[in-house]
Length: 247
Image 1: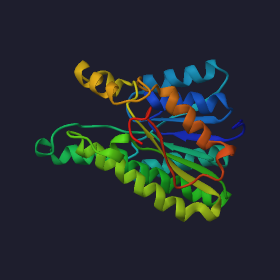
Image 2 (image 1 turned 180 degrees about the vertical axis):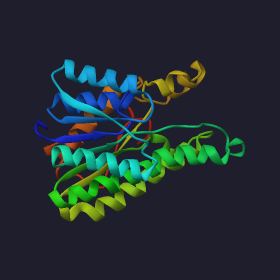
Image 3 (image 1 turned 45 degrees about the horizontal axis):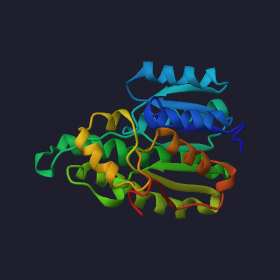
Image 4 (image 1 turned 30 degrees about the vertical axis):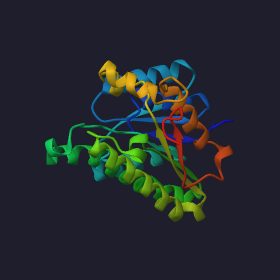
């Protein structure tokens, strides 16, 4: 499977799952636009890794939750490369707490980045995909958006919202040969999960039939398949990669 000649934008692509997705798409020949919000050194490190394996790309700084910078960044990509073929909405944050202890700024941060950011980037990119009559949009959701989880009401709400958004936009864009799908990871070993207490990790592990936590590459390889030519008849779907944690 090759993505040679295609242009891909990955939001939150500087580390974790986003970095793994950048590498997976880059290995298949896509020109990678690596978005980051604040950690420029991590983005540059990801680009260096990509180039070391023979890939090509650039970094792009903008906050996915702010419409004007999103529009300007996408326009810059299209002006430079004449198209944009793949969008992976990966940027995400969390602010875990019991609902009664959350503050309005917590809601603004989590829903702004995770859900609004997905909507804004999709809106900006889909305009060009409609004109070129081709595109792949992959939205990163979460098993928490499917099951809910105590103490993660904000995160769960944002990730569940992505599922509904994915299905609606898949119907809007299908006649233009633009597919829209969601990938819902389970417990993945990332910086975000590394800080969880050992007891919490052990409890999760007992709930996973495959008996191990997922890796960033597990998610990235699925995203690469959905972004590729073999997935042209798949749209509006929620594809889980969770080791059986949720079926």
